[in-house]
Length: 217
Ligand code: DX5
Ligand code: ZN
Image 1 (cartoon, protein in one colour):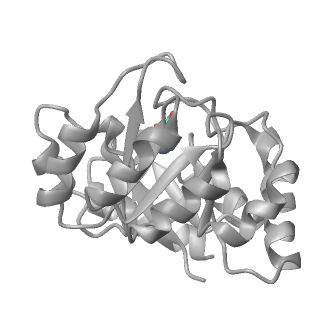
Image 2 (tube, helix red, strand yellow):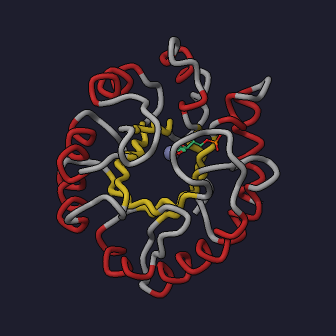
């Protein structure tokens, strides 16, 4: 499966989100980081803003919910028009039920893991989701360094997906740049979130193309 690039609008200008969505219109998804200041020590945006972003975005939205009680909140992001809705394994009470509900509402379901959370206890969930998100930094902030120690976990997750005979995508999020994307791709990732690397570039569209080319090898 060819690599997908999902720039994170966490590094966009929050006073110009519509403009900055249009700056990444050659990407596959716009990654939207929802933080509640409980699951992570930072606060970004919630459902009312997300609903408007879904209405004006030229590309599909990938909602990354870094929130407590995703069982309660995640379905509304699917209803708002998210192409995919990602909840954290550490936060969900009933992940299977939640993944099914997200899919029933027409979005792709994805489960996310902090760097230190093992994926092995969740292998039974693989058939219920379209994507795994493996955090390659501690969630909460953009601009951190890629944690190289997550590479073996990406490999193990890719092997588990292959062993199960499934088509589940593996997304990496945090510190993804021209310097790190090839190692993540080689380990088995095929969806790449990049915030500061994309929005920090002089040529935003060109950076997306460059990252995609490196990831595709
Ligand atoms: C961090 C967010 C990321 C963040 C990545 O908790 O989930 O999506 O925007 O930013 P960079 O690419 O700058 O590490
Ligand atoms: Zn994210």
